Amino acid sequence: MKQFLALCVASALSVSVALASQINVEWSGLDGFVKIDGETPLLDNGGDTIAYLIFSPTGSFYDDWLEVGSFTIGDEVILGTIRDIPYNFDDPYGAVPAFTLALPFQAGYIYARIFDEGTTSNPLDLSLGTWYYQGPIVATVNNTTPANPNIYNMNTGSAGIDGFDTDVLNRQVIPEPSTLAFLALGGLALALRRRVIA
Image (tube, helix red, strand yellow):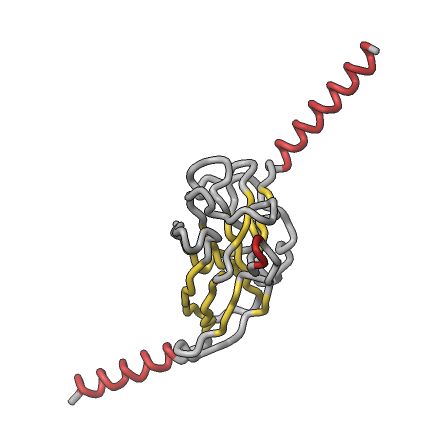
């Protein structure tokens, strides 16, 4: 009898945990993406992409540009990852399939980033020159019904090649601030040298 009661209590606890506040979201980018020319499909010549669903408690870093080697900035956290979005001849735009996740709820914001393969053959290598797209930012919703998740679409409906509602990879990974400072000093030194020679 004691074992039966213990089992009942354990079952009740598991149900209460399942019904606890959650972020339930189905995210996708079904319309795909194009390269920076606004026309060429992202996977036109094969290659790979990687997509991240990002959480931020404040959303304050949404408009900041990423530094070399970093997929996130500030207080951002990666909630979900879709790697190696497959290339096929019917859809060279790199459409991101629907992916559902359920996590403990936190008040804040979610948005997505999708990266091309950058200057290397590995999208996990975020080097200078890697281009990426940043999806819309939305507030998190407390949803305790996993069977009916909130829908998040990475695409905003930019007009791409042939009128498809693709989105353009329009942001670029930049050097870290210290590297930028050295580049600026080097440029200043060259300018001063040229002025002295003249």
